[in-house]
Image (cartoon, rainbow over all chains, first blue to last red):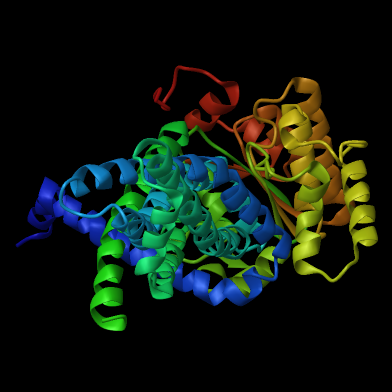
Length: 267
Length: 233
């Protein structure tokens, strides 16, 4: 096949999608390599890391708490509906506790933070790219990876598990409130059920996942932000790509980690 | 975009590259500082081949160069003082007091006082350019690159920037390369003017030679005429 033929084939939708996917994967892995190489010097910029931890962690807290509260509440309503006439209500606390710490807490927190923080990082770095601030940084001999990417990745990776712990507690509390106030389940019954099959490894599995989710969100935000081009429209496209990629990767990695954790590590 | 550009700039010389928008003037400048790699050919700074440099060597080279970007490219998240002090904090061991002294000195050099604590968003276009110039000068570079230093400025501020660039070159011996399509600025700051056209250096000479040239493309450009060999884009 001559070069023109290959180029025409590469422009067709399925091939273009595949090639773009391969290119993005390769470039993200290169960025990840740069982050790991710059990590020792990047984390010495403690004020930048703390600044990002506040922006990512503290800034996401209200949204995380609200989402978690209603997630736990809905879980209680749904579970009680499905338990009716078949399963004793003592298992309500068990089901809510397990589903929250294993799955709902880490994944919903990551999706919510991914939308908020991933978009924010991509928009900020994208604006810096199109206004030549990244070029200026490189011209000054300052590595954008060390100065911009490492603090964000470290902060998000540390803050996601902390947000997840809060989300777990609030979601279970939301389930407890609904159970006690609207489902005629006593507080003692709910907490007894919660303790019945409680395993610390379930909590750890959720927190392990959230570490990966934090890294994914920040990496996607930084990657798409840094490769923005073309002004305001380019920043908008980068922001959309960062959020979409974060959400997809969170769900894919969730499946892979669940398979590893519950079929291999804790089997 | 660039096809066979050949240009030599001597130590302490001020060369201005003129040309229409989209001819690759800024691209040429970014090749000098290693922000863009050429597909072929060489870019040498002090005898060092820039594209072949590794990350560390390129960083060392860049410490000797300063670049003024078209929009200033000040970091929004930092104050003006923090912007100017950033290269010092990143590349030297000087303490906070010394950084503040240098920041004050560089801002004073460009005619800006009492702006250290202000955010770039609160500065006018001319003040942003001058603050960015102060930042580019923070490490006392041997080479300065200017990308459209006077674009978008009122004539008085533009003249102030021109005088600053000339003074830096003449008093401190800084080698200067500027790209612009502002002919008033070009005549003011250039030892030599080079015109970039169709990916090559089309003409080069002193401001007097350029003003006296009979080349139709150069004449059309310096006179700002819509009629001539350069077609509207």
